[in-house]
Amino acid sequence: MKDSRKVLMSDPLVFTILALPSREPFIDLIGFDSDIVVDQSLSNRSQYFSFVRLSIAKKLFLAKKYLPKDIHFFIKEGYRSLDIQEIAFKRSLQRVKEKFPNQDLSYLIAEASKYVAPPHVAPHPTGGAVDLSLIDSNGFELDLGTPFDAIPHETDNATFFDATNISVEAIQNRKILAHALRSVGFVNYFTEWWHWSYGDKYWAVMNNVDQALYNHVTDSELLDLVQEV
Ligand SMILES: [Zn+2]
Image (tube, rainbow, N blue to C red):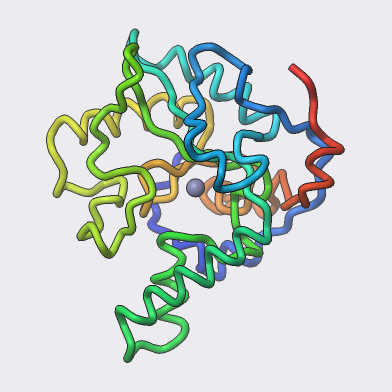
C-alpha cells in the first residue's frame, strides 16, 4: 500500500527498523542500459557512486516503460560510503546550526535530515537508494523545479516533492518521474524530489514492514558483491 505520510529520516520510526546484512549483488549503472544515463560529472563525489543493488538496477529498467518516449532517467548518485555520509551529515548539521542558532539539537537534527540522512539510517550506503532526474533525447535535463541537490531551506522548500512554488511544467515533470518509479516499488523522500529508494529502512517504514532488505555495506563489502553485467 502506498504511504503518503511525511516521515523524516530522523524519525524514531526509521531508527527502530531492523536491517540484516544482504548478499544481494551490486551492479554498476554505467554501461548497464543505454536508456539509463549516468551523470558522470558527479564521479568525484564518491568512488562507487554509480553502483546500486541488482534489484535497484532491475527496477530502473522496468520503470523505463512508464516514461514517455524520448524521456530518460539521468542518474546522479547510488551508493555512498558511510564515511562520506557521516561527513555530509555533520556539514548539514553545521549549516542548519548557523541558520537557526537558537534551536535545540533535536530540531537541528530534524532540519539537517531534510537534506542528508543521519548515517545509521541512511539509504545510500545500503545500495538501495538512487538520486536521479530526467533528460530528453538530446541529453538536456528537464525542469524539475530546483537543481538536483538544492538545499530545502535555501529554496523555500521547493525541493519538497509536493512543492507548489515551482512551474506547472516542473510539477508535471515530477509527476512523470514519480509515476515511473512508484510503479516499480520505489519510495520518495518527501523533502527531495530526486531521492528514491527500495529495500532500505525508510522504504520499510513507508511500506509498514518492520525489517529492511538491506543494511549498509563498506566499500570492500561492496567490491566483494559486485556483479559484472
Ligand atoms: Zn539521495
